[in-house]
Image 1 (cartoon, rainbow, N blue to C red):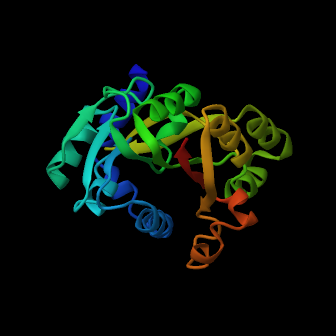
Image 2 (cartoon, rainbow, N blue to C red):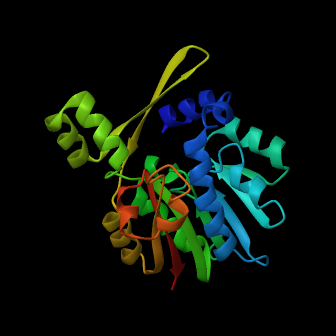
Length: 236
């Protein structure tokens, strides 16, 4: 966990610059469409892995709190949005039972944690019929698979898919930083949600084609091949 914190504390300095591109814009369009349809004005919302405050800013007119494992990320989110921020771990949420009507965690924050523990905690802090909206990196990301086949060949690509683990590598200030991450399939997240007694309203994918077409197909079977997959689930 220390390495994860160090990675994001370093990345925070250039996070908004690094993640400003067309692919991210197409992903945000899908995220915002889902938030617009699923989040109500009277909800108290928790954003897990809020980063520098993308969703806090988008939902600035709502009652929303942010949580991030990185102090530097949280500082930037606070400065950007003025919202209440907590530094903490998704596996041990610092909130009372049934505190929130909605929990969101978008753009892969949950790929770094023990996902069973995190989902259990989300269930604990959600009210009955509370809404859980999240996205995580997809093990069957078609764009990555094609690129890996060209670069690494079939054997190494197949091994990576089977292990469902990898690294995220970025360069900040000329320095190379790296963090371990995990990958999941839609079936994986469906099984974990069912284990913790969530009703799955629907699953979705983002960055399927990295084009405006994604807005039309993000709930179709093609979601299985997006860079990110996720779900809208209800706490029973």
